[in-house]
Image 1 (cartoon, rainbow, N blue to C red):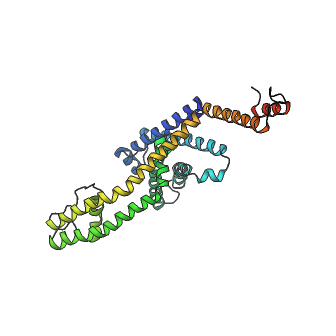
Image 2: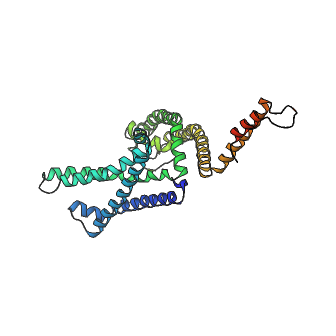
Image 3: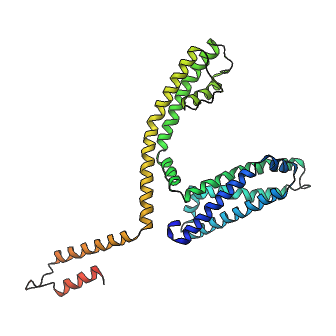
Amino acid sequence: DPRSGPAGKLFACVSVAFVAVTAVGLCLSTMPDIRAEEERGECSPKCRNLFVLETVCVAWFSFEFLLRSLQAESKCAFLRTPLNIIDILAILPFYVSLLVGLAARPGAGGNKLLERAGLVLRLLRALRVLYVMRLARHSLGLRSLGLTVRRCAREFGLLLLFLCVAMALFAPLVHLAERELGARRDFSSVPASYWWAVISMTTVGYGDMVPRSLPGQVVALSSILSGILLMAFPVTSIFHTFSRSYSELKQQQQRAASPEPALREDSTHSASACASVAEDDGSQGPDGAGPTGDSAAALWASAGPP
C-alpha cells in the first residue's frame, strides 16, 4: 500500500516504473525490423534485449502477485478480484509462450506446428496490453473510473439500447435515400449503413461514407441531432456517479493516510461515555461534595488511565 509508509511508496513507484517499461517494450516489439526478424526466425541483439527486458518485468510482476496472494486472508476472494484477474491474464501469456516455443522447436512437429505456435504466440502477446491496467492500483482516477463503470451498468445498458434503436432507424433510411434515390455505391446495404449510423450519432464522422443527396443529408442531420440528445441523458447520470465515486475514494484515502483524527474521535467518544455514566449513576456523594467510590471506579474503568 503506498499509504503505509516510505517503503510502500517506493514499492508502488517501482511497480509503476515496470509498467511503463513494459509498455515501451511492447511498442518497440512491433517495429517493422523486429517483426521481420521474428518472421524469419532470427534473433538479433536488439530482439534478445527486448526479451530480457520483458523477462525481468514479468518476474517482478510475478513476485508482486505472489506477495499479495500470500498476504490475502481469503485466497478465493483474492482470485475473484477484477484487478487480480487482469494480473493473471497479463502474466500467464509469457509463461505459456515459453512453453509453446519450447514445444514448437524445429524438428519437434513440422512446419504446421510452427505456424500454429506462431499464431498462438502473437495472440498471447496481444494480452500484454493488460499490464497498463495495473496502474489502477496506484491511481485514484482509474479506481474511480472502475467504480463508476460498476455502479453505472444500467446507464451504460440504456445508452447501448438507445444507440441500437437509433441505428435500426437511421441505417435503412440513409440506405434508401442514397442507394435507391441517389444511386450512391457507398451505402451498398443496410448492414454497411450501420457503420455510418454509429459514427454519425457519436459525432465522430470519419468521412469514409458521406451522403450526397438532399434526402440523405436530411437523414444525416437527424441522426446527428438524435445522437447528441440520446447520449446526453445517460452521460449526465454517469458524470454525477463518477464525481461521487471520486469523492468517496478520496475521503477513504485521506482517512487511511491520517489516523490521528480517528484517535481523537475515539477519545471524544470515551469522554462522552464517562460523562453519561456519571450522570446516570448519580455519582454525587451523600454531602454533594464529589463522586462516591463505586462511581469513581466505574468512571476510571471507562476512561482508562491517562
